[in-house]
Image 1: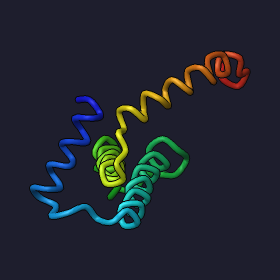
Image 2 (image 1 turned 90 degrees about the vertical axis):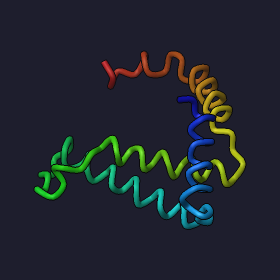
Image 3 (image 1 turned 180 degrees about the vertical axis):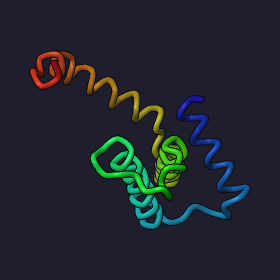
Image 4 (image 1 turned 120 degrees about the vertical axis):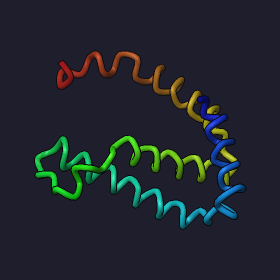
Length: 108
């Protein structure tokens, strides 16, 4: 699914199920909460913290999808075409960082 299609799917969902978008500040807080849930799973599953029994059933993919959903909401309500913005960002990063990571001794 393209980013454009994902934005449209989220917009359709909001119209059909969500009544309206939460305001931008509420969605920013929601995004922070969702990123925190991703961080908790990664810190406990892949980091040095032990994983609590209650966290072992948490699905990292589902939590990442929650983050994506809120990002798409924010893009929609602020008029951002994420497909276009992502393409531009990838182009900038490709030009700027073309050799940077290959020359980084820390990555060898």
